[in-house]
Structure formats: C-alpha cells, structure tokens
Amino acid sequence: MVTILDVAKHAGVAPSTVSYVLTGKRAVSAGTRVRVRQSMELLGYRPCVTSAHSRTNVLALVLPLREGVHLPVVMRFVTAVVTAAREHGMDVRLVTADGGAAGLRGLANGGRADAFLVMDVELDDERVPVLREMGRPAVLIGHPAAVTGLTCIDLDFEAAGARCVDHLADLGHHTIGFLGAPSVVYARNTGFARRTLAGFRAAAVRRGLTSTALPTEAGGGAADAGVGALLAELPEVSALVVQNEAVLGRVVECLRAEGRRVPDDVTVMAICPDELAGRLRLTSIQLPVDVLARRAVELVMAKLDGRQPPALTLLPPKLSPRSSFRR
Image (cartoon, rainbow, N blue to C red; front, top):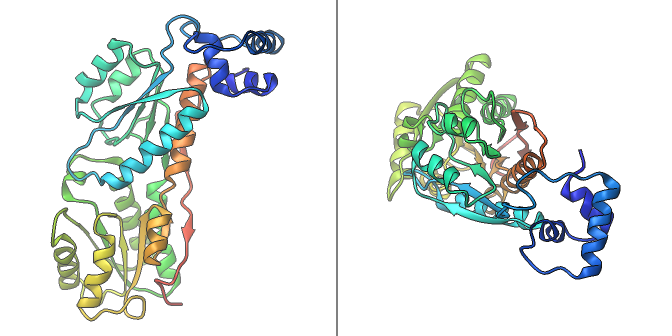
C-alpha cells in the first residue's frame, strides 16, 4: 500500500508537506501542491477517510506519570516521539494524567487526536478493552499479557533478563543478585518490570545459579537500603544486575562503601539507556529509547494509512560490554 512517505519521496518534498496538502492546515505553494497531487495520482495513493477533512495531524502520547516512573527516561521517550512525529508532519499532545480506561475513552471521544501512543503498559491493563473498541489507530510501547487486536512494540525484556544471567554465568559467576524497580511498579504488574524479573529468575534456574531479586524503592537512601538488604541475603554475591535508573549510580557507590570493589569483587550490569551506562562505565543491556519511539510512530502512521501491522514487535536485547566486569 502506498503511504505518505512514498508520495513525499516521489514528489521530492517532506512528508509534512504532503500532510499539509491533504489537510490544508498550512499554506503550500501552488506548484508544490500540483506536484504532490500528481504524485498521489501516479502512485495510486488513497488517503483514509479522515485525512482530507477531519484529520488533526496530532498524535496523543498517553504517558501517565505514576509513582515509581523515572522522569528523565520518560522525557527521553517524549523527545524521541516528538522528533519522529515531526518527520511525518504530526504534532504530539502529551497526556500525563492517570485517567485509566475512562480517561482514554474520553480522549478518543474528544476527537482531538488522530491516533494514540500508549505507554506504561501493565500486563492486565484496564485501557486495553478501550483501545480495541475505540476505532482510532493506537500503538502501545509495551505490551499486555494478551495482544490480540492490538499493535504493540517493546524491547524483549524477558530475553533481556535472561541475557544478563547468561552473560554472567559465561563469565564464571555462580551467585548473582538483581535490584529492580520500586515495589509499586511490580504491584501494578507493569509489563517491562515483571517480564525482566521472570527472564532473570528462569535463566538463573536454568544455569544452576544461586540468586536473589529485590525491588529498590525511590527516595534518599533507597540504594543504600537495597544494597544492604541484598548483601545480607546473599553475602557471597559476585555479580549484580540493576534495572532502576534512579539509583544506578548510587548502587555502585554503595558497593564500594561496603568494601566490594567494582569490578574486582562484584561485576555490575544494568538494563538502561546506553548513555547512562556509558557515563558509569557499566556493562548493559541497552534500553533503545530512540528506536522504540521511532518504530512506534512508524507503526501508528501505517495504521493511519490503512495498513495493519503485526500485533507484537519485540526488539532483541543488545549487550554493550564495558569495564564493569572482569573476565
């Protein structure tokens, strides 16, 4: 199926220019308008019913700022979504209220966005039935337990948790720990946290390792308490996986304060954006914020163009080795 991107390439203009020709939202020179229309006709482009008349050229990014959400990483997602959306001639409306199913239904009925990107997805997310019934294109960054009738994209967090364990086991570690998100994130059954933990635990059993996993709370002293609890429960720990950007740097400091040198005594891995791991010189599984955001926008634009992408796209985890482990 021909898309706006195809028309833009054929006409030699930006995708946003094609959108402006369709919607009349901004002035386009007569010559450019004719060229775009000719490309549409030659390529056989057929905009969806709403394109010419009721399109707002707005994507709603539904990102509730709940307890336990790490704002710096959230804002990286926002920036990446906005940047990708502009390449398609779309603006982004950020919705941070935790309105649940009722709030999402109200947004859809309000008609102030052409499509939706939904984040902080829970395994049994109450917003899913609304997404299936509301009749507007939507893409989830994250995925619930059942993806039928949806379009979702995510890092394969279960594989990421397992990849950490396999990497550490291959280095010869037998006793490993995991410090995760705040307990409230697990209590909400947030998909990324639950899946990473499941992957970590299953791989530890498969590799015959001794392991323990604990949440790490937010606020001052959280990392100190988390590291202290883990060392008390698993004093022989020789490797640690951290999935909590808010406390990551402090965890390394706490280990050193406890007399555990990194990496000589304890190997540390993180699941986080690559830039953060790079600053701390930690081996990591990359959280590919930019790729997830860009692919999510591409998927929702495909749906606006009348195509139906796969229900679930999972990005394989990518390991970035650094100096935080010993061979």
